[in-house]
Structures are given as C-alpha cells and as structure tokens.
Image: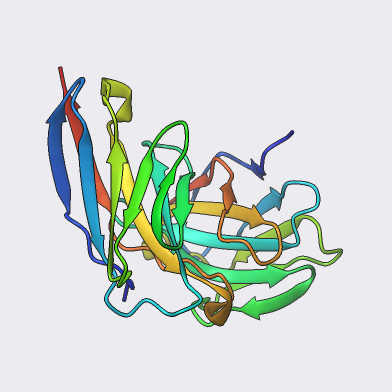
Amino acid sequence: EAGVAQSPRYKIIEKRQSVAFWCNPISGHATLYWYQQILGQGPKLLIQFQNNGVVDDSQLPKDRFSAERLKGVDSTLKIQPAKLEDSAVYLCASSLFGRNEQFFGPGTRLTVL
Amino acid sequence: LAKTTQPISMDSYEGQEVNITCSHNNIATNDYITWYQQFPSQGPRFIIQGYKTKVTNEVASLFIPADRKSSTLSLPRVSLSDTAVYYCLVAGADSNYQLIWGAGTKLIIKP
C-alpha cells in the first residue's frame, strides 16, 4: 500500500516569495491534515479536511496561508508571502474517517531566507 | 496547550525495558490514548493506541490505569534504533480526532 506522498521534499525561498506544497493521501482516507513542525517542537495542526470540506483551520494564519482539497483527494498548501518564521517542516497526514491513527508523509522542509 | 504531559528526555541502554509515562488529567470519556514515534527528518509513525487496561502489539505495550489519567508506554529490550522522540496524545470523537502535540519525550538509547 502506497503511503502519503509529499512534494517537494525541500524548498528554499526568499522572504516575501510564494511557495506551494502538495500532498497525496493514502487511497480511501477521507481525513487529511497539514501540520507545521518547527525544529525541536511537536507538530502543530494548521488545517484538517474531511473529504473536501474544512473541519478546522483555527490555527492557519489565513492572511498568508491557504489550503485546498478540491476533489477530496490530494491537497495543496500555499504560503504567500513567506516570512522568516515560516521556516519549518510541513507535514501532511491522512486517516480513515473517525480514527486516531494518522499516517504521515515525509514532509517538506522549507527554509525562508 | 497539549493535553498531555510527559518527560522531556530519557536515557537508557540497549537490551533494557523502557517505560515512558504520560499524564492526561483532563482526558474525555470518548478519548483514546495514542503514541507516536518520530525519527529525525521523518514524519511521526503510529506505535500503539488504547482506551483502558493493557494493549500489546509487536513493538510495544500500553498500560492504562482505571482512572485513565495517565498511561505508560513500554518498549521491551530497546536497541539503538529506538532512539527517537515519542509523543503521547489523546483524542476522540469530541475533538474531531485532532491530535494536539506537545514536545514529546526524546529517548536516547546508549550502547
């Protein structure tokens, strides 16, 4: 069974530039999560989708971050414009509906210079 | 704030049994207790989940007392490859199965 796919694995940008991350969850997983993980900290939930609807985006900085899951399968997270403090690993995870077990992708390491 | 409290770090030696205890005083009736493992440069990986008493799988055991206000992850006969960060989380239907992550426990296994 294929795992959660993410791309790119690494990205370096200048501050004020834009960046987008892509995630393809495990087939059949209705729930998709985007997390931000800063070095030395646990993951912080940015947004949770149930199929193509948003369940929770209370911690998403909506002035610069956006995310979509148009067909209820893969998802894109965008940052526009990026700030230095956005440097982190962005993790995508998916799960079956109503389950705690989340499956994580390898993450995208973003460096903002 | 994380719903759980666990030690920041622990050391042990190869071949020993390691127990990591987590406190979750405000656990809800519908919450399950879940543990994840994370290696550097990788996403977290599910280890084990339980609701009460004891759960065992091929890699770990989870002990949960009757009041469910704490839990203990037990790793038998650890090896160097068990060096990682371990996260204890509680979640359930009432919280849309959202996992609120603390800093975890950094476990270092020595030869």
